[in-house]
Length: 431
Image (cartoon, rainbow, N blue to C red; front, side):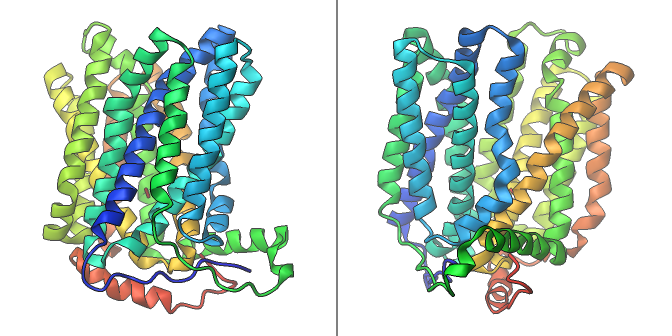
C-alpha cells in the first residue's frame, strides 16, 4: 500500500510565507463557498420551486461526509498537497460548468443534486488534507496558532464576506456567484501548489491497491480512533456538541420570532452574533491553549457552551440570547482549535487523514439526530426545551475530559513523536 511519509518538522519556527499561502488559500475558497451557500438554495428554488427538492440539494452536499473514512484513507495515500490542489481544481471545474449551465438556462434539479454531492466529496478531500498538512508547515508549539488562523479565515469567508457577496451577485445576474466560486477555487489551487509536500512511501505491491486494501485500511483507521482513549472520548463529546448545536439551531428561527418576539431580521441578528463570537474565539484560542493547556481549554469551552444554553433556557431576553450565542460560538471554536491540534499531535502522521475523517464523521453524523430531537422537543415541550437539553448533555460530558492531557500546547510533541513510532495493528489510522 502507499501512504504519505512522515513530515519533516521545522526545527525552531514556522515557515511563515508558506503558512500565509495556506491561510490565504483557505480564505479565498471560503469566500467562494459562502457565495455558493447563499446562491445554491436560491438556484434550486428558482429551478424547481419545490421545497422538498431544495432540501435534497442542501442534504446532498453534506451526504458526502458519510464517505469520510474512505476519503481519509485515500488522503493518507497521497502526498500532502495533492488532494487539496486536486479538490480545488475539481471544484473550480464544477463551478465553471454550473456557471455556463445557469447562463444558458438549462439547469435541472437532478444535475444540482449530483453537483452538490460531487462538490461535497471534494470538500471532504480538501478538509482532511488541509488538517494533515499543517504539522508539515508549523512547529509543534505553533499548531494552535496556525489552526486558529485557518479557522478564522474560513469563518470570515463563509460567515461574513461570502454569503452577502453571493446574494448580491445573484441579484445582479444569477450565474455570477458560481463564477466567483470557480475563480476563488482556482486561485486557492495556484497558491497551494507552492506548499511543500510529504513524500509518498514506495508501495508494497500492486495487490495492496485494491478495494479490499482500501476497506481494510479504512477499518484500521476507525479502530485506531476507538483504541486511543483521548480521541475516543473527544469523539463522544463532539457528537454531543453536534446534537446540542443542531437541536438549538434547527428551531432558532421559530424561537426568535415566537419566544423573543423579534421581527424577521432578528434571526439574521442571531446568526451574525454567532459569527462574531466565532471570530473572537479564533483570535483568542491560541492564547487560551498556551495559558491553560489543552485539557483545561476543552473543559472551559464545554462549560461555556453548556452554561450559555442553560442561560437562554431560563432567561429568554433577546440581548442576553445574542450575547450567549456569541459566547457559545467562541467556546465551540476554542474546542475546534484544541481538538484539531490534539489530533495532529496524537495521530501518527501517515494516519492523520483517516483520524481526521473518522472524527469528523462522528460530529456530522450526530447533527441530523440533534436537529430532529430539537424539533420534536420544541413541539412537545416548548421552545426552551432544546436549549435545556443541549446544556445538560454538555455538562454530563465534562467528566469525559479528565483523560485529556492537561499540559501546555508545546508539551504534545512527545506524544506525537511516540505516535510516529507506533506500529498499528493491521495498519490502524474534530473538528
